[in-house]
Image (cartoon, rainbow, N blue to C red; front, side):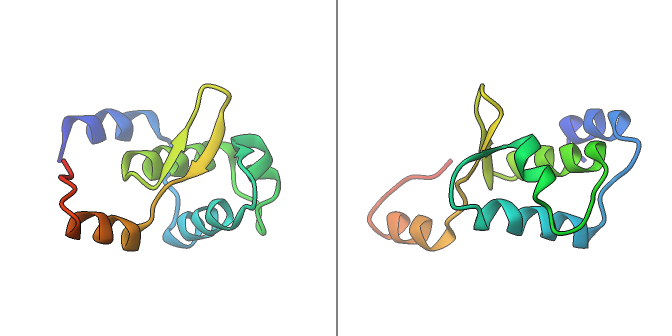
Length: 94
């Protein structure tokens, strides 16, 4: 277990269930425009506690699926097909 995850684990009182993570992930991915974290949270199909939602965003950012800019805008960046194509063309991924 990485030290970063251990720090994360100490700060979180409630961990999201898998269905909650998937719901939030799909909501972000399907958003037509870049929305703030609060806007996404309000548009979720089912309610989630704010802390659970933020823990999920932390996980998605850590796993490289989203970016959160200084304006708290959440941007979906995960595209495995595009990454595979770039790797075939010689892109070095670290």
